[in-house]
Length: 384
Image (tube, rainbow, N blue to C red; front, top):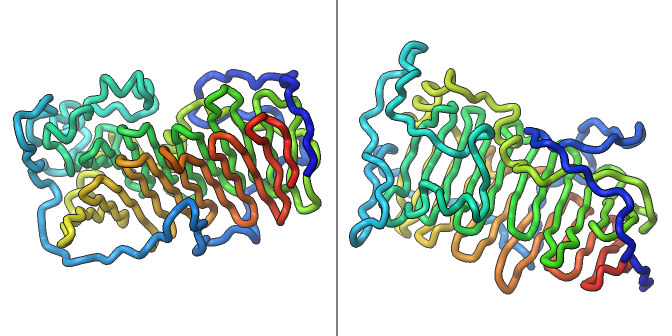
């Protein structure tokens, strides 16, 4: 095992770019351009890492008890701390161009690029779903003025869906956001431990360090590149081992889930009527164990009594899970599998084929083709 000092500060700091829908990158060399092509290591990942996530068992459909999707909110014990909104009126007929202006059925929602200030602590205090459980507004399905559909679940969980089956899950209790693109070529996970952004054949990772020395990694066709804010070098772990290289990393300070959700998905006022029709044709049922299920536009949403939310589409090839009770989150696609959690098992784990990254708050390790390297708790490079 070789130890190398990595205390020199980076000579070039990452630029602070203006907020954009798609993260901006530094200029790449011509050899760095790589159009999205399916790779050999793009697997379905049936064998998930046993330490970080349980095997995603198939969901049993259960008895399909007919029930209206637009049901009344469940009553909450005791007087509510904060009233949410008056009950929704009956669904109108499909809206025409002249009837889109008033839209009394569709209250303004904050999750949109133009009017979402922040998803973290400073915004949560003014969140309209702050007391969702007490107000008894869980399990409410609405169509938004932006042409999308939204499920407001209990335990401060929200699931947004587009007419093209893009999914965005917001866990307000733990500051967790997960997103799946409508075409399946992009995904994002935002967690207190870090961020993961997959676009095409590349995966970029930002691991948050409590001491301010954030770590960066990128999985691409060359291998796994990684560095840290206080490291002047960029390292690459490929099939030959570990070596220094020159590489660039995306600006991941923005809310990447918004671009994943809205890009390549039809949205806007012209799709409000289509969103309403999809909600009207949706299905809702409750199993004997008290698990609530929704099936809307081919996307299945399930929530257990303790708040665990699971979203699946495309015959479970794309799955999203998050739990408000322990701050766990997982994202699984044919291109990627990543998990994150809080508490005693706090970690951030990302896997794509033979390339892996694991961060537990102290050590940061990347693996590729049998080779491993990373930073230890003292920010020193370690090659295994």
